[in-house]
Length: 411
Image (cartoon, rainbow, N blue to C red; front, side, top):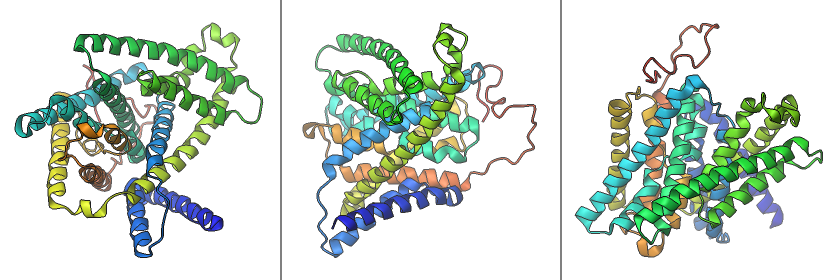
């Protein structure tokens, strides 16, 4: 039995790797193939009456680890530059506006037309309003550099806004004014902790000569993340800040820090750290989506009521996204319109809603259908999107045309 389990795990990893490579040619996101693989395993196990131990309680644990590593990996690739100011402002604004407006409209519909409480309506709407960085970021490799960075910033901050506000609504029982004051205070505390954590972990990364150090760094990041969650701090913001400080260490090169840090060696250590992080992220993300597919209730996916609700929600998501990008932010819509998938974070937050606050119309099957529909639209966008094959002037950087006079992004 032990050999059989190891064999199956090895096959799953190899299949996930094949899906990841094939996505570069087929433009079909590997995530949708992983979910499909999980569903196929479920059907085969049922038909063969093969009993697989219930690992559903492990799903949120794997998802949380994957979320931390995905955001950390993405933040380590983000370079803060003055010429990207417009892109950063636009992407963060897009993340907040689309999330806030969707959640507000969703809550109004549920309260006014179906009679649910405003608190429960908001809690059920937040998971659907968040762009999943775990799906969007890996799928953005086909985009041009400026478009990819837009997706990374937007999806990462969408996760952060969603988690912070979800925790605020879920845990807040007192006055709104007091809650908002604590919310602002917690963000300040988080940023201070992030700076301290970065200094300590960067020192370990740079100074430790023992052959095991990268795993300890990642374990420490997850540890601090969990501790921050336990004391109700915006933990994902902590992870993002940690990664941003490391990836933009050049700003510290002309400060007194240079007396303690060999920056060329530090950057070499950082590159090695990123490689190991990328491979661990690949493993965790793969097993999460395979397990998610395995525990999906297939019969609920073909229920007409669930399909109508899911299609309506997905249509509303992308109609709102089109309006915000095109009319309000004045950003070229294609291909960014399609990069609004729901995924890992949607599942995690939905599972965190207390049963007493669950709305029957928004079932687990509806959530699954919205995730699959949004990923399918992402796949369509990747298939039909073609990069412009224009001659490149070597004297001009890849992102020189990101920000136009007046701060508008030209994509």
